[in-house]
Length: 193
Image: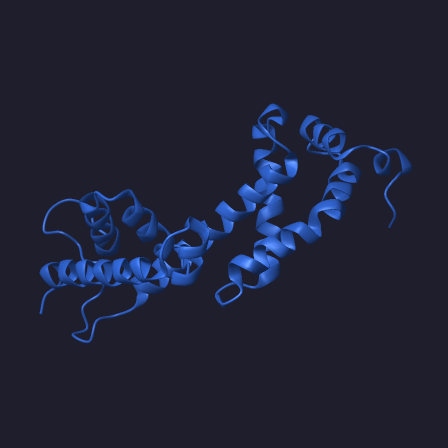
């Protein structure tokens, strides 16, 4: 189905404004998806290339749902819509990947049969992984190491982190090993033997 001619002639910014004014303008939203679908697919593919937890099309659908929910946050004075959409896509996919990793971690059992998520003796249950991650994050004083830690949690590879942040790959590798050691040490302290 071809979009109406008046929509085709609109600039991207005009079309976005029309979508912002009416979330029920199906024709405008269809045209917006048509114009930006390939860009969204490319971004999602780049972030999920080695991840097999969700169907690729599910990520795409979530992006469009999130955009529908948050399009009013777009401010043309702060940048182009394309940049807003790419940031929204990036953040959504990384949030989904983190949630899926955490869910996998939660459902894994230790060899002793103890669940990863242990209740405290008093108060609400504590997610041990989140507690360990928070402790490691708090202990990092070097902002470069904190950046590396965040990107490793998001599933980035050493070479990607080094390239994207203009860091020496050997420094990133050493930091990864140091962080892994910190996490293992904290888990050893927390988990029963």
